Length: 207
Image (spheres, rainbow, N blue to C red):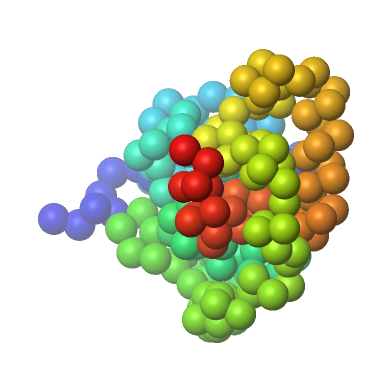
């Protein structure tokens, strides 16, 4: 039996409200699709698919909706950042900004069916993933305390929790994280976690 039968419940987690509303209308044109904008309602009961952009807290979305399949709307991420999302966070698809409406609808259906949607551009980035680490700083050069902070971030802890565990103020933790971002040439927690997973052995030593 095809898994396409029945409505496809889609949660839109897009930071740009205008883009989010436009996508909602485009998706609603197709029959058997229920679409909710995360920015508007903040809630969607058991979505099949989460369509998100890079500004979202993907880890929280995945923890809230563990059965949902994630599709990234590419808004200009670097190749190594997208390949990290594919490998580290196990998202099921990437939609390019130049995709046609037909390809956009097809991507949603393919991912709902249980397959992975990656176009040639992003597939190439994934295949060349092993060379991406050289574009970032080296986690091995971080202090033990910085590595511990990265480890706690990777485990999903917020700044306040990290401060309590390390007996430091939340403000101090925020300053440490900003410095770590600059040191490793990353701009958000998702990129940091992806990079940390490349150096998994470094964090086993902290146990």
